[in-house]
Length: 332
Ligand SMILES: NC(=O)c1ccc[n+]([C@@H]2O[C@H](COP(=O)([O-])OP(=O)(O)OC[C@H]3O[C@@H](n4cnc5c(N)ncnc54)[C@H](O)[C@@H]3O)[C@@H](O)[C@H]2O)c1
Image: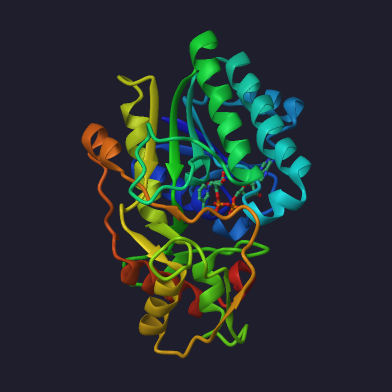
C-alpha cells in the first residue's frame, strides 16, 4: 500500500514509517517540520514539507499521488503548554485535522490510522480498557477526544474507515542490528520524563523535577504505562493490515503495567549507573494520578504483543540513543 504519514518526521511517526517500509509498504511523509527532524525520516520514504491545515497543498499532494491510507501523527503534544495556550492546541490539533480529513475524503482516501492518547481517559486505579470513562484533565487530551469524535462521525456519515490508537507513554529508541540507536526521542522542547531524567547522567541538568508527591498512588507520584516506540509502530502496521475486514477500531496501546515517577527514576539510576538527584515541586496543572492500559482488545483482535515490555529494556534503548545523540538530531 502507499501510506501517507502525516507528522512522520516526529518521534513516533518516523519510527512507524520505518516499520511500514519494513513491512513492504510505500511511504510518503508529510510534515511541516515545526517539531520534526529531516534526519529522522527513513531514506526510503518520500518527503513533502507542508502543513496539515494547508488545504491547497493537500489537494496537490492527493492529486499527484494515489494513497491507500493516511496515518495521522501531526499534533502539538505538550499537555502542560496546552493548559497555558489552549487555542494553539485547538487550532493545530482539531482544526488542522479536520482540514486533513476533508481533503482525504474529497480525494477518495477512506482509511485513517489516528494517534490518540491515554490523556482522553479519566484517571483510574486499575488498567483502563477502551470502554472506560473518558475525561481529559488537560486541553491536549480534550483535543484528541474532539478529533476522535469527529472521526466517528466521518465514519458514519462519509464512510471513513478508522483505527484510533490510544498510546500510553511512548518511550525508548529504535536500534539497528548492531545495537546502535538510529531513531529516538528528540522533542523540542522536551517534556517527557525518561529523556529529561537521562539529561542528568548526560550532564545536561543537575536534577530531575518531580511534579507533586501527594497523588493517591503508592509513593505519591503519578503512575504511567510506558510503551516502547517500536511496539507502538508495530500496532500501526497491524491496524492497517486489518482494515480490509474492520472499519472502526479503537485500541489502547500500552504494557498494562504502571510505574510511578519515582520508580522510573530508580530504574534510570540502575540502567545508567549514575546518581540521579530529584527535587519535588508543585503539582503541574492537568496531570492525572494514574493512567495504565489494558491492551487486551488489540491483543485479542489483532494479535499485538509488545516486544520490549520491560521498563529496563525501554530505558536501556533510550540511554543508547541519548549517549550517541546528546543533542538529538543536531548531532547528525
Ligand atoms: N509521545 C507520546 O508519548 C505520545 C503519547 C500519546 C499520543 N501521542 C501522539 O502521537 C503523535 C506523535 O507524537 P510524537 O511524540 O511523535 O510527537 P512529535 O512532536 O515528535 O511529532 C509530531 C510531528 O508532527 C509535525 N506537525 C505538527 N503539527 C503539524 C502540522 N500542522 N502539519 C504538519 N506537521 C505537523 C511535527 O513537525 C512533528 O514532526 C501525536 O499526535 C501525539 O499526540 C504521543
